[in-house]
Image 1: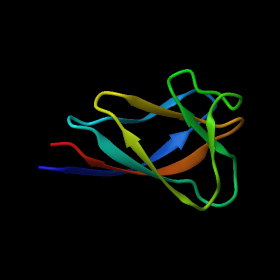
Image 2: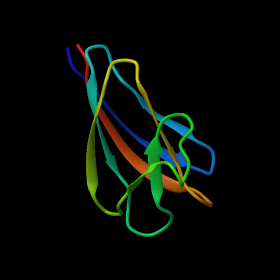
Image 3: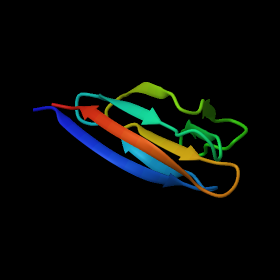
Length: 89
């Protein structure tokens, strides 16, 4: 049976775990609201220099292999990131 997990993550200046790939892989949908800081995603060492910047007010779909982890960070302050994680067996 597939899993659906919806959450809001507070992203700060240290990498925050956003999602872990479910058994059989999964998709992660991310939405960074308008305004505030740019959110960057990547591995556990993600920074504003090496991360993938999420454009504001858009939804992004990422395929996440089983057991892989996705992290996020901002340059200053905090930002809310909306997350929906689906998939698995």
